[in-house]
Length: 336
Image (tube, rainbow, N blue to C red; front, side):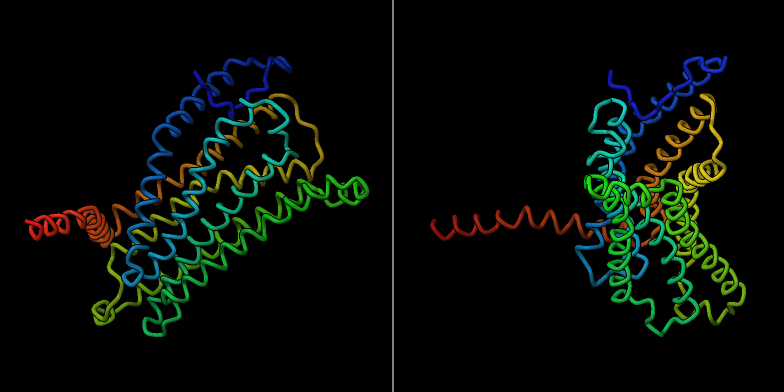
């Protein structure tokens, strides 16, 4: 049986600690990760693909939130593709390919960080644009056209943010620049920058957007609610998406904060604390991967227009498969 090797338990009785609790937790996390790989990854791939196809096959029917959810679905597909490598690969391989400085490890880390940035920034910008649409409904500042360009900038910014990891890796292979590379490479600084840029900025933006939306909803008059305002289901979908995304990604960034604080203090940790931090890191990354399956399910059940889009997509696909049969029947009747 292949056991996910992501979960590590380095507490082999060091410091007089009983390794049994760690081993039990390791087995529980391994079973949980296997369950996610067998059910969560196919679910995420299917729902994210349907979300993308149902919206992209009819671009004229897309709204501003649909563009952001399609953007999150693309990042979700990337996370689903990375999940087996992260959950099964490093410990199972046990070789140089998974060394922290190897090409494979750096590539996986860059792609994971890109997906994280796209996911959280798309969520935060969705909240801000929903507020703009509520407060200024006829200014077209949050139009579909503008939103598509914003999503393109989000992907470009995420790729540029991952360039630092590639720079460190390339620099480490230049023997003449090893001294400069050693000065540039600071894991604590890298974690602090990732925490600030990848979590604090979009997190504060999302909280600010929800606060503004709550204030606008309180100030709405009955006439405002009848003047083409978004329906309550759209607000529920927005709140559920923000809570789900940041709730599932917060543990991952809290582990980065813990590593940054411990590195700044410069205190050595014993085996028990090291094992606890590693397990917390692995569990937080598992929750981050789970977001790729949770959010499209929320979209499927809370968005009122998605079932109609899906039905139109299925009809279009069925018409495509049946388009050849009438032509063949017509040819046979003519020849007869």
